[in-house]
Image (cartoon, rainbow, N blue to C red; front, side, top):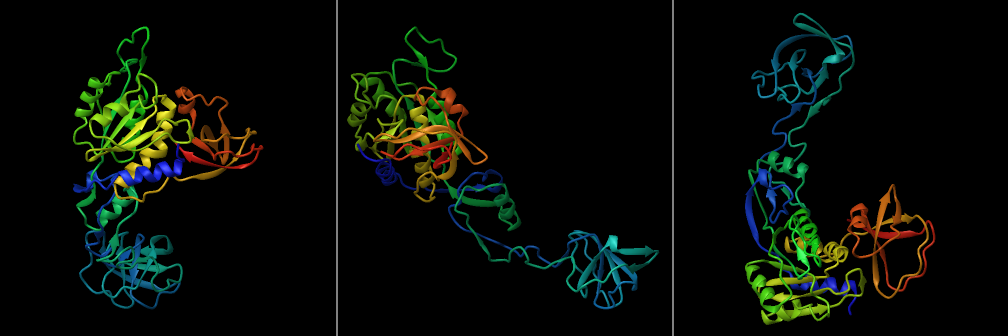
Length: 390
């Protein structure tokens, strides 16, 4: 049995970047950039007015000054002439600053009568002007080390990028195993249950940049398992759920070995999730997750998500940890790293009373996994604890 850190290092050694593709900007949300984007123009491309008001050219620009209004500029419609000293130009937000202008007075600070304005305040040079290239300049490089969010897409659009090179979505084949399973909507037999964790894992894959294929449930015999493994052809990552333990009907390792599995490890010193397996099957990495619903989902957060990020070119690192104050006391932890279902609200973490690895109702209420290192002493109310968001 190896530690969680050792197991995660082994998983990172099994996966590799999956390659790149070019997608339109409109389909790039949530994707990981695989190459830099270069700004194709300055932003703004010209000095522009930041407010509705009047552009002025030098002095006089003090309170009480009266100036003639010689024209107008609006966004998309600049003023073609040159603004001379002692003149004013009606200007609107986003309009190019005319040649000669060096400041803008907002419309609330003037009195207008016909074709003239009178300033109600002093106006300093540069007031209410957005300088050319004040946001970014042509040639500036953008490459965030994270999935692209809405603000990133707006920036890329402003850089005049119609498409972007991104990491290909990892293709993940999900295989639930067991004679006891039926899919949601089917009628279970008297000794059967509904397959649940495979749908949670599918959502977890999709939320972290991958594409998940749910394959048919593999029954507890070698021929059935190998038949479903054949359907996973072309996947970057094969994830099995259940059948990875040591019971008489836990045949995943044997079936995978017949199809060329090179196992990296089996069993991790964690709870829930001890019977975890990983290795290579041909070109694909493989993760064999426990069958208990909560165990599978916890292992998904701890191993599957970091693996997906690494496959998209992001840093190979564990799920980020935060700290909170514990509400209530907890007993000493045993020899395995414990991921306790918990809830964090306003910096206070409360662990659920029941930590049974079959209770999806508890996991659904949780937004955190409290991380208890092996062989740690009891925790008192108010202790600082580490947690992972789920």
